[in-house]
Image 1 (cartoon, rainbow, N blue to C red):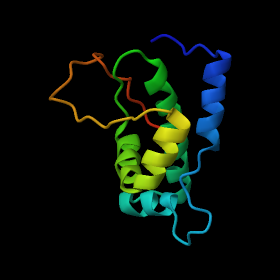
Image 2 (image 1 turned 45 degrees about the horizontal axis):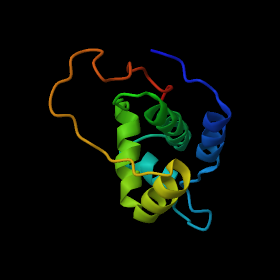
Image 3 (image 1 turned 90 degrees about the vertical axis):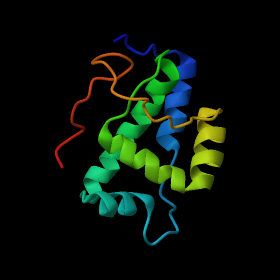
Image 4 (image 1 turned 120 degrees about the horizontal axis):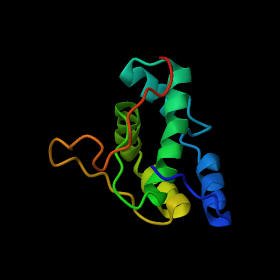
Length: 124
C-alpha cells in the first residue's frame, strides 16, 4: 500500500477531520456513549474507534480505489448515518466537501482486492 502524501491540501483536510466533532457538547448522552452502549464497548474504545474512523476517512479520499473499513469502523459509520445533519451537513458538506456513500459489498471480496488489511484497532 502506498503511503499518503502529506501535501498542504492533505494536511488541511486532516486538520478539518481532527476538528470535526461527532458528540454534541450539549447532549447528556452523546454519540460516543451510544456507540459504546450499542456495541458493548468501553467509552474509551468507542473514542478510539471514532479517531480511527477519521484516519479511514482520510484514506477514502486519498486511496484511488475502494477501501473497506474494519467491523468496528463500520458500526460507527452506520450509527453516524443516523445522525443525518452531522453526517450529511457537517461531515460530507463541510469536512469532506463531497458526499461519501456507504456501499455494501457485492459478495465475498478476494483477499487483498479493494480492501484495507484488517487489524485490531486497540484492545477492547
